[in-house]
Each structure stands twice: as C-alpha cells, then as structure tokens.
Image (cartoon, rainbow, N blue to C red; front, side, top):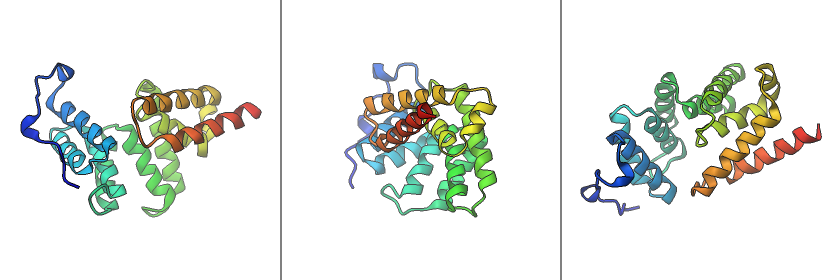
Length: 195
C-alpha cells in the first residue's frame, strides 16, 4: 500500500504538537496512520520515534511485526521490540510478552506469563489514566488471574469497570481494534456481578 504521507509536508510547528518532542510527534502520527490502516507510514514513523528513544513507539513497532502489518510476520522481531520496551516499563510490551509465553509463540511457560501479567497489572494500576494500555493489562488479569486482583487489595468489579471505561474512551477516539476487548470486559463484569 502506497502511503499518502509526505514527510516534507509535515509541520512540526503545528499548534497540535506544541510542546511535544519530535519522538512523540512521530509516535502520534504513527498511531494515527496505524488506525487508518496505513501501516507502511506507521512503521516508518514508529522506527523514527523508537530511534529517538521512545519506548511506546518501540512497543508499537512490535505489534506491526507480530501481526504482519504491511511487512511479513516476524515474531522474533516483535519479541525483541517488546523485550527492550518491557525492560523500560512499557505496559503493553510486558503483557504482550506474557501473551507470547501463554499462547506458545515462545516456549509455553504459564508461570512466566502469569508473572508478566502481574507486572503489567501493577504498572497499569499506577498508570490507570492511560486508557490505551491499562485496560488491556486489567483484562488479562480479569480473564486469567482474577484472584490476584483481590490479593493486591483491588476490587475485581472496580477493575472491570475501569477496563470498560478505558476501552470505551479508545473506541470513542477512533480505535478500530478494541471492540472484541470491550465485549470480553463486559462479559467478565456481568459474571462478577452475578457471583
């Protein structure tokens, strides 16, 4: 797919980007391109941002490799991106590595997956206002290890509600990838209420 994005026309002085560093501008533009399905542009911008040290861009690049967004699926490169970003505390990278160990993209290790999900959950509770990633960390714990939520002193129902609220915000802003997560979160909340 040919990109309609021309970097020469990119205006770094636009009021929308006032106060943002170049790496964050590239990250935001890359995310917008990803949502439009312009993965070539997203990858190019994520790489630029990651080269400038942006860990979210590095994590997002991992998604492009994992799902083969206009490039061949390369789960080793996805893992490399996520491992580097996870070391630096990127929530999505931590839970995506957990997914790789849970679902067998790496040698299946449910204990390690569990530890990664718990780590992502703790990071997410400290960053719950980040509705782009916190709800997904919450959802994994709600699905696989709900008792750990209570053990940490949190209410499962409150975490489920926070998860749903965050996912709805993403969808309202044009996120094209969250409908399935919203359905899962709502179903979990109904089960929790019934219990």
